[in-house]
Amino acid sequence: MSLPRYDTAQTYRWNYDRAPEPPAGIEIPRIDRQWSYCGRPVRSPLAIAAGPLLNGRWILYYAALGFDVLTYKTVRSRPRDCYPLPNLQPVDSPPLAASGTKLRSSNVMRDSWAVSFGMPSMSPEVWQADVERTRCLLAKDKLLSVSVVGSPEADWTIDQLADDFALCARWAIESGADIVETNFSCPNVASADGQLYQEPRAATLVAQRVRQSIGKTPYVIKVGFFDDSLPCGELLDAVAPFADALAMTNCIAASVEGAGGAPLFDGQPRGIGGEAIRAASVEQVRSFASLAQQRSLTTKIIGVGGISSAADIKEYLDAGAEAIQIATAAMIDPLVGVRILSDLARKQP
Image 1 (cartoon, helix red, strand yellow):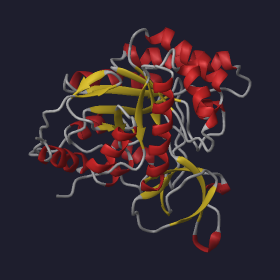
Image 2 (cartoon, rainbow, N blue to C red):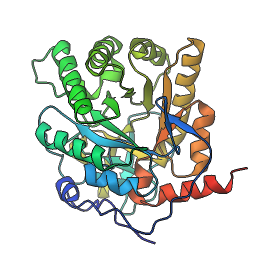
Image 3 (cartoon, rainbow, N blue to C red):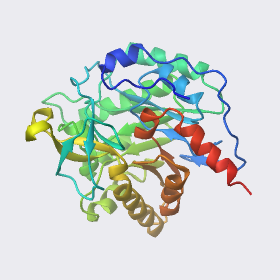
Image 4 (cartoon, one colour):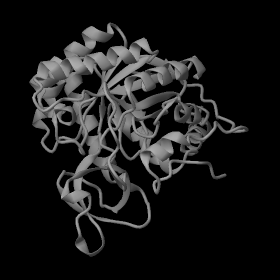
């Protein structure tokens, strides 16, 4: 069976306006085991990362395909346009173990691509109304997470950026979000909103303001890739008092060359998602989970990167993740969740 999916040949707005209808007749396999996400009980380990779910209609589509935690694509306190095409460029990539690699583009999507959206957002009045409507329509046993990010001006202080993050987080909760996720990492954005995970002091301030803004609502911080494991403990110490969980890894930055070696994206790095980052992301999850255990922290780790099977999920859980998020595989094959649940159901005792 072939289902509608995000059309990579079309613009972000084109896809935003043409979300598929929830399919009829899809049987979702049931598994008996109880799972948790950010400390909240869920029926399965299937969550979708911020990225594929452009609006509420996309959320309802994937909810009907077996996903139980659905993350609304990152929103801002003011509208922002998407980067021009290509937004999802297939690449030929070996397993990545460091940022800064040069990769070649591909005409065929195999398992990895360069992501180039730039964290676009509709205006607050649009996304707030959409989140509220979506939470009303979404099944009560499914969790709606909303990803937010600050939108700094050139002359802003970190205090102003922290307040902007907190404002978006509060709006998300007021609109009905069950969970707030702040995006502290975007490899395609060079300003402070995309690099917070590399600045522990700034991350502390932002996380603290967000926590004050959302009260006891579950709070996830999404972070990027660490080439050096030493700063991992610094970031964990900086945000653990405020965040319930850290989600990782938000792509690995690389430059991409097209035909004839010409640089794509004006030579600027882009985040690589998919199978190419799975091994490195699993190791980062393992490092953070170990650090959290050593410090007797309750902070959970959510694994992201290259997940497309039940075996991949087990690898992340064995590394210390409480839960996982899927993005690339769900965009390539909307039925990936059904396949994973079928596999998990067959393996039940």
